Length: 200
Image: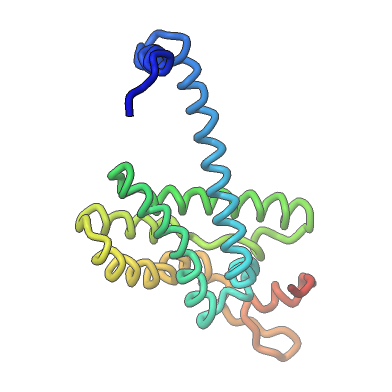
């Protein structure tokens, strides 16, 4: 399909680096990128909070049974989708890492403004999970193998297995046993009992 004369003129103006049209095109790019980043952050944050949120909100819910099982499965959905988009269209194996960074940024904004400043929960009760090492590993597998199938098999297994290990160093201090009024509790349970919160 051939371009009309006016469309060819606009295209020629856009291709000139110092033209007025190319300057507006670049300004539009700088406007679109933050909007897309914010949209991905909002979509990933809402998806994660609705499906695995309670296990990631509270330190006493970060248990050995559900938190390590639910969180990687729920996160993998959008992380893999963004990774596939970046690799298919741009041949960049950075989609999972960018998605993880955007999620962590959204989580910290939510925890600081919503939980700490607004509801006065201590940050030691509501810190978000560490997800960037898992996303880096997923991108590394895709970069080295260049195969969606191997990334789906080896990358997903490593993604899930790295989750408890990458979070253990910050969680270990909350697993220490303490005795309160003759009862044996973990520090996380005691923090959870000390700060009342609504049920969801």
